[in-house]
Image (cartoon, rainbow over the protein chains, first blue to last red):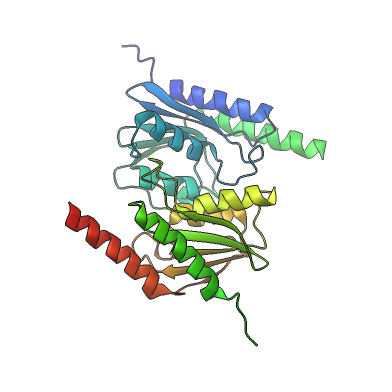
Length: 149
Length: 149
């Protein structure tokens, strides 16, 4: 059976958000939040634009999804994000009680996995979806940035 | 020499923010951010009002302080917060590169200390300032909430 709404489908949507961030000169990370195969929030990193270290894609997506739902818990939702969440974003996911986190590229140094951030007991994790694309976009960003400076 | 602007002075200001949260029916946590003995941001927990798990006092204070400064790093600033920060807020402090975190009541279960959240290498921590007052306000809140339900 064809399943059009799989992890790759939604990660592509998160990737499109990352591309928007790229075009704005932001570190290219994008996120979407999905409930029952419907995207209820889209966001990309805006730390430079907003001068705000808390403006990671995931944080904005959590806020937007809760706003859409009219309640602060995201118990049946899935977060798709192009880069492994940091401690802050994983910590926020704990409070949101999100059902699943699906990420693309790994972030061994600042990601929540190696830093041991505690997720909510009900949160499941899938990694490596479109990993190469997500990672290449980040590498391209930092290479271009270095060449400009 | 009399030092009017000590940790207790600023924690009292954070406590006043916690009292505002209490009066709104929010878990009473307050925060201020100080630069050169001047308060540049005040905030209190607004998770219920905003329906947003990311609306902890510290997160709003980081955003407000960066907005005040016109830059996203808080390298010379001190965060005063009535309750030990959680993983999310400690994770945000990492990105802000804040110079110091001073907190009142400890939070052994969900606080960053026992959960091992990594702070920025330059961030120093002081705990236990007005601990009893900060803790009592939280206890009073949960007792009143239980009696209402």
